[in-house]
Image 1 (cartoon, rainbow, N blue to C red):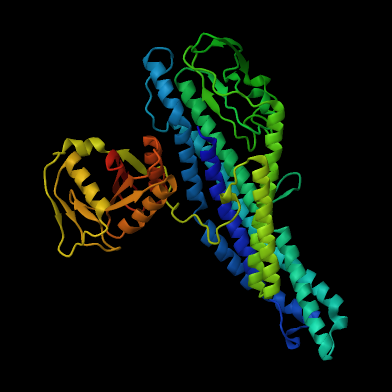
Image 2 (cartoon, rainbow, N blue to C red; image 1 turned 180 degrees about the vertical axis):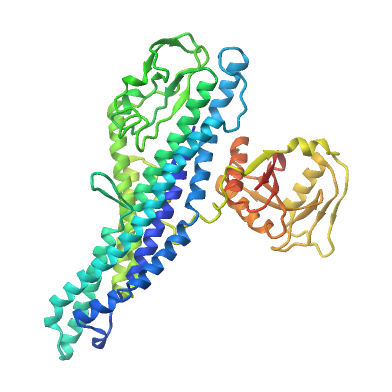
Length: 556
């Protein structure tokens, strides 16, 4: 299991909430504009009455932003949980299956790789819990927005009252009055933005921001679901042992258990690895705060179980030195703080724009953005840590668009045997539709030749247009995309899906990069995008430099 895979999914959901908060705060800021002339200045009582009269419109716009950005949160959560289960079994299933076929395990033997009823039950339990919390976050966030607006109106009203004495009819002091008025508005909004919005209030009374709580909750839920899937599958094969993964910057309660062999049946004693080494077995009862709080497999824990088969498995990874671990953990927290500071400076710039701030103020804020970026860059250079630019910004209009279809009920099946059953290699013709221009179509020509060589059939190059398919083959229209990196694979697959939905076509994605990618990585990137975005039934051919890697069928 790749922790980064689950971390990225949880952050992807959290960043939508972060974007939503930014959109709400920027929208609130526009209700507190600067003034440029004396006649625009209102007395404190009139100002307060006028601002509170707009509460209905503020609520309406806030609800619209929340629905627009978060309307697909439930479906996105379901997809993330399903991918967590499949990801957790990706490496564990083959070893368990092989050991069972060799008679080394005494469980039910050869099991199908699909999600089992027990895993579905665990999925549903965790989904229900997390979905309820996400809905609560939305409600609390709406209430928090209303409170933030009211508090800001009261704050600015009080500030205006304190500056009333400098407002008079003399020209020289009018400028001072406008400046003082704008300062009252600016400081009030700055305080509102600095306080942010609340998404959750825990039992201790701590106020969580929406993105922080969602990131924590979704990350914990994804890891819990993935762990349950491994434990359930391990038990189904008649095995009760697993090794705790090792990671840098482990939390204090987790660190002692890295690399240890644990039994979830409660037994202790010893076992042996592939090389015959004797290894101690620990019981889960020995672990302090197991699956609780800051303990192993508790809230926000990034550790995971790895199946350990006696006489077959080997110990994987060496735990980091305690001092190095403590240092890495502290540096990770410092980096997160610098990332938050940079995001906040960028958000404050957008708030000033919404208020109609002066060019001098905007220039000053842009300088703060550059300074925050410089501080983060310097920290990463000094510590050797990788800069995670995805955590330094929140997309302006991030949403869960494309996650509308629940994953269970969505099928991606391998249909390469269907194609092979009717294949007639090197037969058929390759022709061009009237008006087709072959200029800049070298890649499409190479892919068509590869299809003919491997499967045969008549192929027609379609007249080039952004609204039309590239080829017609096997009574289906096909869009052909090439990509030279992991990011491009995802982007080109997404673009192909948007194009083919117009004519219910299928797609061919060919990796043409100079760096070699593992076959499974290429396929996984393409299929993950298919699961997240596809809106119609289609076939997907994945290639590596025109060599077919697999053919899959997506059904809604």
